[in-house]
Amino acid sequence: MTRLGRFVVAGLPALVLALGGAARAGTPPAFSQRCAVCHQPNATGIPGIYPPLAGTVGRYLRVSQGRSYLVHLLLFGMNGPILSQGTRYEGLMPSASDFSNEELAAAINYVLEEFNARQLPRDFKPITAAEFQAARGTNLTQAEVLREREQLFSALEKTARNGNGR
Ligand code: HEC
Image 1 (cartoon, helix red, strand yellow):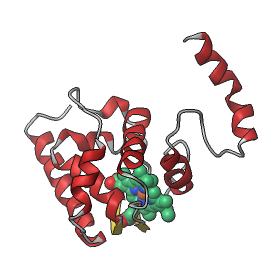
Image 2 (tube, protein in one colour; image 1 turned 90 degrees about the vertical axis):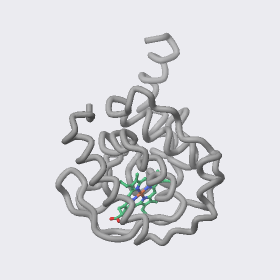
Image 3 (spheres, protein in one colour; image 1 turned 120 degrees about the horizontal axis):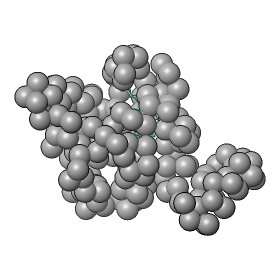
Image 4 (tube, protein in one colour; image 1 turned 45 degrees about the vertical axis):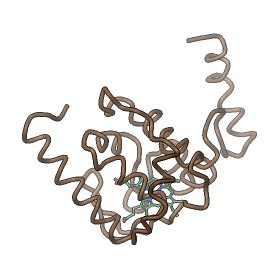
């Protein structure tokens, strides 16, 4: 670890206290201001209420629909029952489309790289602002995004059965 790294880690509790737990240095504003309020600053969620993002969503990128599901989810939200690591959630994920494409890309890449690094496919490329821009016009409903999640899970199961999963 670099000297700076040690300083940041050692100083973290004081910094978090000083900011009232608001943000860590380097955390994208959209994540700390919005996502962390429900999914928590460490992305572990709250069991039964807000699903975890840590260690769950990285594997979605092993199939092509994973990227578009995450982009659509942030732009349009999602509503309806889901299972995450065996726990049932039935809440409302609100649209975050009031943030810019760049801010949304930074937030989701932070979730993927900071909390899902081990699950990401080896050829992972960060999600771009252009992908958010291109999807804005599609205006999916929150129920349609839920269906995309179901299709994504079928595709992931198929990949695992074919032995292509990691
Ligand atoms: C008001 C609370 C709230 C906020 C703010 C919020 N979410 Fe969510 N999020 C939820 C809920 C509730 C669900 C589950 C929705 C369902 O059950 O259909 C969810 C689902 C998700 C999922 C899907 C997880 C999975 O297993 O497929 C991801 C990814 C996600 N949120 C990321 C984010 C990001 C990134 C942000 C910030 C831009 C954010 N959320 C902001 C409440 C929130």
